[in-house]
Length: 455
Image 1 (cartoon, rainbow, N blue to C red):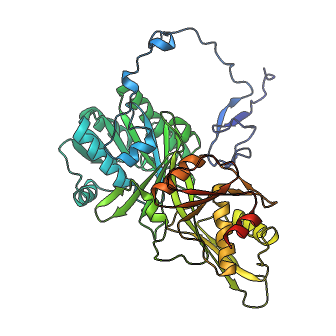
Image 2: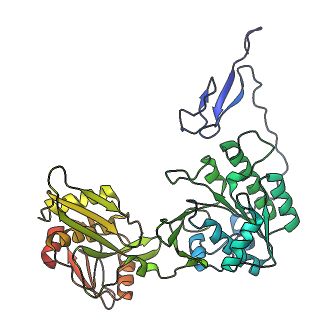
Image 3: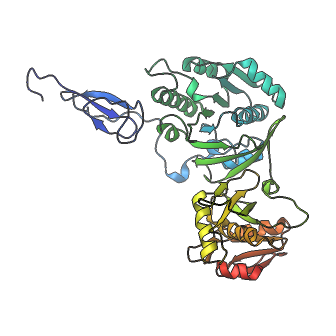
């Protein structure tokens, strides 16, 4: 206890990471979060009270006796979205969907709400960014009108909860969580405190009413979900909606999923009629030509459990003179491209030191996994030699710094997809397993051997 007459100093703690400080600061020095340091008391504050045993909501049961009826996923009717969710929407689950402005989040979720309303009963869409009339116009454009689909435009949490009481929906879509404020807590609209309070309240209501809730979230300039990190911990599923503005392709990924795999991907195409699922997207990432051209190679990437054909292109041109040669990358990891470029020159015997090298993926897809290394290396070598690769060839394998070709996971599924798409030969590492029907395996141990086998 402090001495008599000594004024107690308030203590402050970060609500994100627990960092303690004697004085208030705007930004937590530990986790770098803004506005999360709050006063928790002083030196003379009363100690924590002991908590006595209280009533329980339900009796603990052996895990084998727990009922599963309320935990089964209900399909939304959009196969690509159900693939990402692991089968559909689970009653009582809270989902967070985030993406760049204008990427198509609201349009897709309006279609999801329409499908759920037609199949399972009342659905409520609450918009804090648009009026109900604006949402109605979008619904007419994509054909998402239904008597069981309710719309409201609110920015107060209490009003949202009143709508939930009146409609009693099976699905609530809130667009977006940053635009709704809770009068019970202080803080600026859209700030960390407000967002956390709104998400916590809606999560509690969703669990109590067994109501699926989808929260739309904003993203920061670097693509991360805006708001406190605790927002992602409060929800059951976190979905990112990605896509380039100049492309009609949209990719939906689950970065967190308590009810299914967290590495699945759904492919959509956006157009005048809304966001439409693409069940076989491989053709979007591969160019269709009558004859092979230099600097192009096809590989097979894995997005979750789905194999996708993707094309890597390279262009090697004579440097314009003084200065360092240019290295430009689009759709690929620039650090990985620089490494493969060095291996092609040092281990593959292809001279690139005085040449400009440009590398890109086709169709706006981002290729980050090492399984595309071999295809990238062959595309660069093909462009430098100005000689195309054989028609009907795919290349799968990771390239090491010593030039060796390493095996990658899911080779059997990758080869099966290549065979299904009509490819007849595959350049793969040694001991890659049996070849599926219709495709011939060309096993290579290192990059120099691969280049020698092809040219």
